[in-house]
Image (cartoon, rainbow over the protein chains, first blue to last red):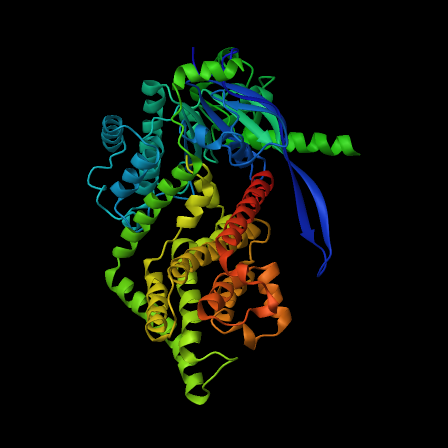
Amino acid sequence: MDGASVDGGFIELERVEKVFDVRRRTGFLKSERRRVRAVDSISFTVARGEMVGYIGPNGAGKSTTIKMLTGILTPSGGRLRVAGIDPSRERTRLARRIGVVFGQRTTLWWDLPLIDSYRLMHRMYRIPDLRYRQNLDRCVELLELRGLLDVPVRQLSLGQRMRGDIAAALLHDPEVLYLDEPTIGLDVISKAKVRDFLRELNAERGTTVLLTTHDLQDIEQLCSRVMVIDHGRLMYDGPLAGLHEVGDSERTLVVDLERELPPIEVPPARVVRVEGSRQWLAFPASESAAPLVARVAAEYPLVDLSVREPDIEAVIAKMYAGQAGQAERAVS
Amino acid sequence: MAEATADEAVAGPEPSYGRVREGLRAYRLIIAMWIRSTMAYRASFVMSTLANLVATALDFVAILLMFSQVDVLGGYRLPEVAFLYGLSATAFGLADLTIGSMDRLGRRVRDGTLDTLLVRPAPVLAQVAADRFALRRLGRVTQGACVLGYALAVLPIAWTPLKAAMIPLMLLSGGLIFCAVFVAGAAFQFVAQDASEVQNSFTYGGQTLLQYPPSVFAKDLVRGVTFVLPLAFVNWLPAVYVLGRPYPLGLPAWVAFTPPLVAAGCCALAGLAWRTGLRSYRSTGS
C-alpha cells in the first residue's frame, strides 16, 4: 500500500479548474471585471516515482497548477489529491510530505550561513536528528555544498544558491518534489549538476518529481513524460518523443554530394536548402530514414550524410501556433 | 474515507499539536533567525536601537515642552499625562515589537514571496507575524517603561491591590488590542496590497492620540475610539479609574475593568479577519 488512492495515482487531478476574477481599472473609480480561466478542466495522474516535465508559455497556467498542488491556491472546481491529501484543506499536513523549490525566490536566509537555514528546516519540520544528519550529508556530497555551509547565503553564486535551495527542500524526505524553473539563470556546469542530482534522487529514492521549465534540455535529459499546457488546457501528455508526431514535425537529412548538383528528388522528402555540394532534405518525423537514405545512396553520388532530429522548441512553438489557429477558426 | 485510512497506514499517526502551540513554536524559531540575522550587522543594530530610543524619547520631550508653558492639560497634570503616555507607549511598543512588521504583508503578496510561507508546515499567521522581527524596537518599549516608571514614582495615588493589579493588566490588554489592530490591518492587505499607510494611521496614530487625556479631544472622536476602534480601553478608561478622574462620555465605572474582555473580542475579530483575508488570497492568488 502506498499513500495514493486505489487506482494508483500519487498525484491526481480530475477536471481541476481555477477561475480568477481579474479587475482592470478603466477609470478613476470604475473598473471592469473579467473572468479568466487560468486552469481549464485539467485531468492527469502521476504515479509514485515518476519524473514529469510540465511546460507551457508564460501565463499558460503552469504556476497556477503547481500552486494548487501545493495547497497555496484553492481550486475553483474539480478534484485534486496529492498522496491522498486534499492540498487546500490540509495544507500543513501536506507540507510535511512535499518539497517545493521556487527557482526565482530563494527560501534561504540571506544574511546567515547556509547551515542556519538547514537547522531551521530541521526544527520546523521536526526531522529526527539521525535522518536530518543523513539527508544533509547526502545533499552536501551530491550537490557539492561542502565548504559552502558556513558561507552567508548572500555571498553564494546563483548556481550555489539554487543547489542550496534544492537541499533545503529535501531534508525532510519529501515524497514529491515540485521544482519551478530549477535551472533558470544557471550556467552550463551548474545546470548539469542540478540535473545529475535530480536524476539520482529520482532513481535512488523514488522521489516523484514534477518540474516546470523553459529549458527543454531539462525535459530531454530528465523526464520520460512531458505535459504541455496552454491557455489553461492540457494539450499533450505523453513521452517526449511523441511530441514530434503530434506537432507533425519534420526531421532533416543532410547529404554531402561529390559535386554541386540541382536539388535532388526523393519524395516525400523535399530539399529545403542547398549550399555548394551540401543539401538539406526535410521529411516527416514519423517516417523511417532508412529507405530514404538507401534511395539517395543509389541514385546520387553520396559522400556523407547525417540525420537531424527536429528541434523540440520548434515543435512546441508549432503546436501552440496550431492550437491558436484552431481557436481562431472556431470563433469565426 | 478509505483514502484517509490508507494514508494513515503509511504516515503513521500524524503528530497532532495544537495550532496555537504550533504557531508559537514557529514564531519562536523564526524570530530567533531574524535576531541572528540582525547580529550579523552588530554595529548597525546598536546604532538603530539607539536611534529608535532617541527618536521615541524626543516624542516625550514634546510633551515636557508643552508643560513648561502650561500647568494643566485638559485637567491633567504632567505626571498624569506621563502615566497615560507610558501606558500607551509601552503597550504599543510591545505589540510593535512582537508583530509590528506585519504591515509588510502587502509587499509579500505583491512579489509572491508569501507563497514560500504557504508551503511550510506552520500557521501562516505565525510566520508573517515573525517576519522581519526587529529587536531594535525594544527602544520604544524601554522609553515607554521609563516614562511609566517616572509617573508611578511621582503620582500621589492611594494604591490598593486592585489598582496595582490594573497596571500589568492594562499593558497586557493594551498590547493585545494593538496586536489585533496590526493583524486586522494585515488581513486587509490581502485585499488592498498598498494599505500599509492606512494601517499605520490606526496604529501609530492611535498610539499618539492615547498619549493625551481624553478630555482634550472632541466627544465624537472619543466615542469613535471607544465604540468603533476600541483603543480607549488600552489606557484611558482603566487609567481614569486608577487616577480617580471623571470618566469620559459619562461611562459607568465598571468599564475600567473590561479591557481584557475587549482585548479578547478584538483578537477574535482580528483572527476572523485574518482567516477571511487568507482565504480570499488562496482563492484569487492576488
